Length: 418
Image (cartoon, rainbow, N blue to C red):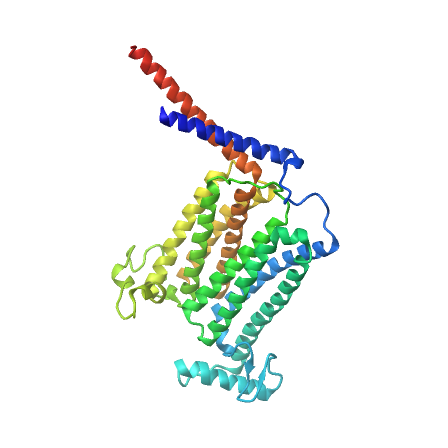
């Protein structure tokens, strides 16, 4: 009987929540005073929104350029940061313009980078210049993006409405952007150490998620606030977090070249779990196996991908009947396709030792998958229609349970009268 009372209480509470959310959606006057109204954007706000969406595209290009730098090994072609050094007395942010400048940069690269690991090895000037321009273009894209981001901040915080809608997320992403810039410098100064490269990549994905979340808050899809989001929103957050962990693992996999130790799939060394190779001695601390042991890095990346696949499929199956917005429906339909493509690209890249085109496609598809999950997590968290749908579903289930329990009690009483 106590369970029946609890179920009835939950049913009343959830039904009340559903009614409240539905009323807020149908009656604009009942919406929160903090919700953006129907007033059109002014020119400054419109410029900020256009710039914000342009920066989303710029982030995608910048991260692909970073992947190109990593896959081609071009990061150390400019072994200084943020200033480029051409000899002891020549420092500049510009590339060389003379044969003497190129020769100085070429000699500096071999002296400070190549000969410390492979004495006597020399790259051709043509290859060095190709790697130099790849890294220089990546840095130029990053600096241009930073300038655009500062303009976005100035436009946002001169508008009270935009400040309320996305100011906190832009500030948070700004802090992550500063950390990302510092990490980029540390990556160069540490000669692209794999752990720092993986953290740099993960921070870039986190920054892009914050920027995308701020963008979604300006779409005005959900003017009403949802005080209690459905439980499935939590699992969407979990899927985003695990995918971010997989990104970190992928950064280690790529930079440590861990794919070379076992370029086979699905087994490694004709076994599912090479335990002895995964935990070896020779590290100052056992946990360093996680970030330095190529076999363990390879094993973690391939099996963590199955966790991501399971979570994404479960999320699709659980939410496919929910009343998504148009953007949500498109994201949900694209999610399965992008997930399948990402798995295929990952396997093909592994067994072919990550050729450049496959590596870049794998990175770009991974970023698309991550953004689709962030979009779904946003909608599951903020959509009043989905909150009402889940509340009604829970209330109906609780009502059915209470009715079934009452029927069972009645049958028991009839079978055993006092």
